[in-house]
Image (tube, rainbow, N blue to C red; front, side, top):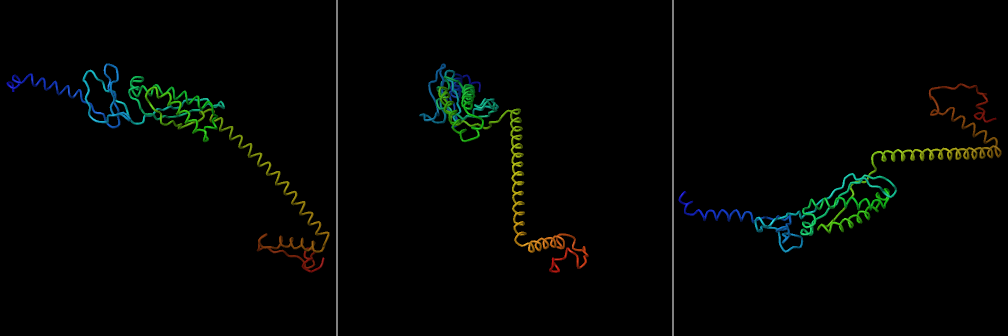
Amino acid sequence: MQRIWEDYRLTIIALGVAIVGLLMSVYVVPEEEQAVIVRTGNPIGTVNTPGGETDAGIYLRMPFVDRVVRIEKRLLDLEMSDEEVLSNDQQRLLVNAYARFRITDPVRMVERAGTTEGVRNALEPILNSVLRQELGRRTFQAMLTAERGSALQNVRNNLDRQARQYGAEVVDVQITRTDLPEAPLQSAFTRMESDRQREARAIRAGGSRDARIIRADADAEAARIYAESFGKDAEFYDFYRAMQSYDATFAAENGDAASSIILSPDNEYLQQFRGRR
C-alpha cells in the first residue's frame, strides 16, 4: 500500500481533487424548483424556468465562482391576519386575507428581492395597502354581497401590477374573514336585538288593535243580524235562542254527563219543549 502511494501519489491526489471538484460542480434541479446561476453577483443563466429552454435535471457549475439560487416553482402564499380596516361607512373591520403568487421571472426576483422570502416581505405591505384602499371605498354591508368579488379582483390587479417588478405574478386574492371587532360587534348585536324587539312590539300592538277592530265589527254585525231577525220573526228568534241555551245546558260534552238536572214540568225554562211561550 505504501509502495502504491509512493508510485501513484500524484495520480491519486489529482483523482481526489477531480472527484471533489466534480461533486462541487454538480447540482440537481427538481421539477418543483427553478434555479438562477449567479456569477460574481450577476445572474448568468437559469434552469427549469416557466417557458425556458432547460428542464429539471443534473447540471454543472464552476465551483467557488458560480452560486445556485433555488426558487420555488409552485404557488406561494402571502397572508394578512387580523388587520384593522376602516370601511366607507366608518365601520372598523378585522380582515384576514391571503394572496397566491408564483415567480415567473427568477432573474428579476434575484436582482430585486434576492429570495422568495424577500418577495413576501416586499408584497405584504402592498397587499395591506391595496386592501385598505379598496375596502375603504365600500361599506361593510357591500362586502357581504356580490360586490365583494369585484373588490377582490381590483385588489388582485393592483397587487399583481406591483408584484411584476419583483418577478412575481399574483394569481388569486381572497378574504377569509371580515368581521367587526369584538366590542363594536357586541354593540351591533345588542342594537340589532333592540331593533327587532321594538319591531316585534309594534307588530303585536298593531295585531291586537286590528283584532279588536275586527271583533267589534263582527259583534256589531252579529247584533245587527240578531236585531233584524228578532224584528222579522220574534217567535223564531225566541225559539232559536232557547235551543242554543238547551244545547249549552244539557249536551254531555258541555258538562259532566253523570250529573242530573231536576225541573218541574211547568218550569218557564222548558216552555219550548211544551210548544208554547
